[in-house]
Length: 283
Ligand code: C2E
Ligand code: CA
Ligand code: CA
Image (tube, rainbow, N blue to C red; front, side, top):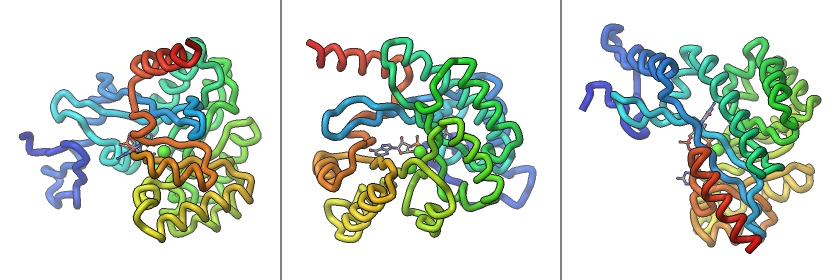
């Protein structure tokens, strides 16, 4: 195996002290190479109405397939690109590719689908980000209401003034703002007071324990009830079995995402899967 060991989900614990052997340096080169030679691709995971199984939208997730190191998890390379600044060219490529694919989904007849895009805090604060995204949306003649930006709590905590200015601009333009991994940070409730958001994604870690842990059940139930009272949309992520789905649905969560409902797939694979399902429904 290559000395870098960038295999599945591998996380480096600490950078080496010798700059000549620092794996972070080498990962930078791998990412530059990936950007230059199109080793990045996008996959799309469906979001479904839990009651009707209707396809409502997708979440865009980036993938990196390096010829040298194989699959590299975004959980590994995204933090690195944020530290090195490479998230700017990568993030630009991500939103452009994703919006283009959303346009293609619409053209193939999935006309009201939404697209959720994960946005790094570093990118959100980059001057010109709002203008560039909006100009891409308008060039493609997409409706801003079909676009959801997913931000983690960490993204919202750092530089709240800059962040709230950018978020307000997006919201005024009709783009939806969502808090990802809701409940996992330290400041979830205060963020809801500080930022005007459209929806919350219940983190997979709570969904994982919903059947067996009283605490996780109570937390999911409380998040859903709170979202309803605050008039926010809510999505549960990481649903892997029928029991989780049933409990969440009974608690009033209307939209779900997870391997049970659909795994992340390429644009064309999704087109095949969902075209076939809609034919089944009309048959
Ligand atoms: P996230 O935004 O919380 O994305 C959800 C992750 O959970 C995805 O992993 C998805 O494949 C996985 N997942 C969804 N349903 C299930 C399930 O039922 N079971 C299990 N075990 N996993 C499930 P992925 O694609 O590896 O992404 C990991 C994280 O990397 C994302 O977490 C997000 O923080 C980041 N990321 C991924 N794509 C992008 C991107 O395009 N831009 C940015 N800034 N970050 C991204
Ligand atoms: Ca997300
Ligand atoms: Ca999440």
